[in-house]
Image (cartoon, rainbow over the protein chains, first blue to last red):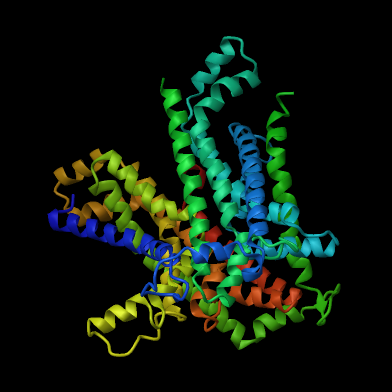
Length: 268
Length: 281
C-alpha cells in the first residue's frame, strides 16, 4: 500500500483528471448562455437563451430540426438491432459451433478497422452498385459495424459469469428452450441488455466518421456539427453542443436508472 | 432444429458484418487498383495509386506523423490511465465511492467526441481562458500562440478523448487481483514498488493490452481531431484520406486506406499474441 503522501497525490491526480475531463464541457455549457453580443470565450456579455432559439431557425445553420429527427431515428434503429442481434449471437456463442472462432475474429476486426475506412468502403460499395446511400441504409449498416462488437463483448462478459443451473432448473421443470430464455435468462441479464442498448444509442447518436460518406443527402446532427466547426464562429455552436450533451446525459441517466430498477426487481 | 440453432442465432451478426465490413473492405482493395480522372472512376488494374503513396515524401511524413501521434498519445494515456485505475482499485476503499468515481470517468465516453473537442476552443484560444489567466498572473506578457491549432492541441484533445479507454480495462484487471497476494508480498518483505513491479503490473498486462489496442487504433484512424485541433496545420493518414475523398480521388484514398488497414491489423495482431481477449471479459 502506498503511504499517506502517495495516496494524497493519487487523489489529487484523480481530482485534476475529473476537472480536465469535465471542465471544457461545463465551460461551453455556461458559454452557450452568452448574451446576444457575446463571443466565443469569456467574459460573458450578459445572459440570454438567444443561441438556443437561433438553433431552431432553419436559415441560420442548415436544418437542424430535420437532422435531429434523422439522428434520433437512426439511433433508435441501431439500438433495437444491436440489442436483438448481439443477444442472439451471444446465445449462439455459449456453445462452440463451426466457424465460431472465425466469426469472433471478424467481430473483433470490426472494432479495429478505423471508422473512416468503413465509411469509405461502404460509400464505394453503394456508389459502384449504384444504390442510393441514405441514413437508413448505408449509414445504418456502417454504424452497426461499430455497435455490434460492443454488444457482443458485453454478452461475452455476461455469459462468462452466468450460472447455468438456473436455466437447467427451468428445463427440468419442463420449460421449453424459448420459455427458459424468456422467463429465466432474459430477466437475469436484463441490466446488461440495457447496457447494450445504451452503447447502441449513444454510439450511434454521436457517430460522424462512419456516417460521413454514407448518410447520403440528409445530414445527421454530428455531421452538421462537424460542418459548423469550420463555418460558425458564434456561441450557437456551443448551444448545439449543450443540447447534444444534454440528450446523451438524459439517455445515460435513464439507462442507469433502468438497470437499477431491473436489478432490484431481480433481487426480490 | 437444435443442431442448427447456433447458426440461426449467429446468422444476423455474420450477414451484417459481411455486407457492411467484409465486402466494403474488399471494395477498398479493388478500387485501390482503379484509375480515375477528375470526374469518374475508371475500372482498371494500375499500380499508380500505390506508387503515389510510397514515392511521395509528404505521404511518408504523414504516415510518420500519424505513428508519432499514436505513440505519444499511447504513452501519456498509459501513464495517466494506470495511476487513475490504481487509485480507483487500491486507494478508494468504499465500494460506493469507487462505483461513483468509476462511472464519472466513463460518462464522457457516451457523449459526443466532436463536442468535447469544440469545448477546448474557449480554453486554448488566443483570448482564451488559459492565456488570459496566465497574462493576469504575470507569467507571460503576450498570448501563447501554440495552445490552439497546433500539435500540442491535437495531443491534448486525444488524451482527453481516449484516456478512459485505458482506465476501464486496467481497472477491470486490477479489481480481479486477489488482495491476499498483495498481503503475502508485504509479509514477505516487498515494498510498494516491488509489489507494483512483480505482482500488480504482470497481472494488469491484459488490461494494458486491451487499452493500448483501443488507443492506438483510434488515434491511427483519426481525422477529425487532427483537422479541428491543428486547424489544418498538421496531417494524419485519416485526414489525408478524408481530403482525398473530398477531392473525389477515391482510388488514391482507397490505396491509403489499404495501407493504413494493413498497418493497423499487423499492429493489433502483434498485440493480440500477448493476450486472450475472450478470457478477459
